Amino acid sequence: MILLKTIRNVKICFAIGFVLLLLSSGTAAARRITVGSDENKDFSSIQEAVNAASPGDTVYVYEGLYIENIYLDKEISVRSISGIPDMINITAKNSNDHVFHVNANNVTISGFYINGASDPLKAGIYLENTHGILISNNKLSDNHLGIYLDSSTTNMLNLNNVSGNEVGIFLKASKDNWVINNKVKVNSLDGILLEASDENRVTGNLLNYNIGYGFVLSNSSRNLIYNNFFQNNINVGYEGTNSENTWNMTRKRGINIVGGPYIGGNYWTGPESIALCAVDDLDDDGFCDVSYDLGEGNIDYMPLILHPSAFQGNERSITFSLLGFALFVFAVSIFIVKKVMSWGKGELPEDDVK
Image (cartoon, rainbow, N blue to C red; front, side, top):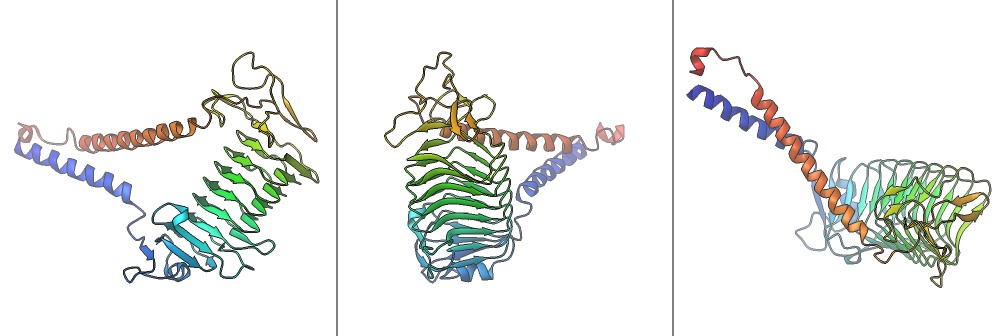
């Protein structure tokens, strides 16, 4: 009996250790490199920290003003320590260069106020021939281009505030990227511009008061554009040949960008906040009962109607997503423990079990 209890205790300890190993795998060798103005930090400039980093490392930047242009050519993360962009200002030292020039895959840039790349075709963040990049929770202004993707695929631009540039977000020859949940406002030319860029997904964005166009397609096809809020002088513009772009998804239950009960198309309004689709919603599904013609063969078949509880759904869906992930991790842990506990059952002689 004592032997059986000992074996069970060993199994439990092994199972717990195995779960912890799974959760921490891949991070053991990663380093935490700090950037700040005091002596306790590893470096005083972001570029110095990037130069010293190895793939998999994370550079944490503390509050302050950093005047530099950063070239990033390795698979690392660069994050603000606070997660509050206004507390960490990165201004271009040379306005004729990008503030961040990324020429590596699987990079994260998050939590910065990025500005000062004002010369033509220079960007706050420039991705050159990359994939697997996450650009999240940044504020970009006073650049010629806020975020510029050049020949880049499978990247995500999420929760950025891209305002007060000439062009907010520019995709050139880029495919299969996700542009989601960004605020793209008051840019002097265009909000989002897709040039020779196909099969991208653009959803959950607020495009407000951009002076030229809110959204421009230039020789770009098969993009999916849905659940965005358009409020610009001219919401959509076209250049060249654009085909098979889709402006709504199949109706799906979920809180849309203006608080309605289903996700489908986009919300369309003008600078004076007069809805461009103002017909009755007889079936009360949150969509206009007629489609919205965007010109040149582009049609939103499920344009949204403003709902009183606008913008309250995003926080709710995020909360449920995090809860679901936590439950999933817990269930996997229990499964592994049970599996390990079952190892060796029936292998002990009867005399040892008694």
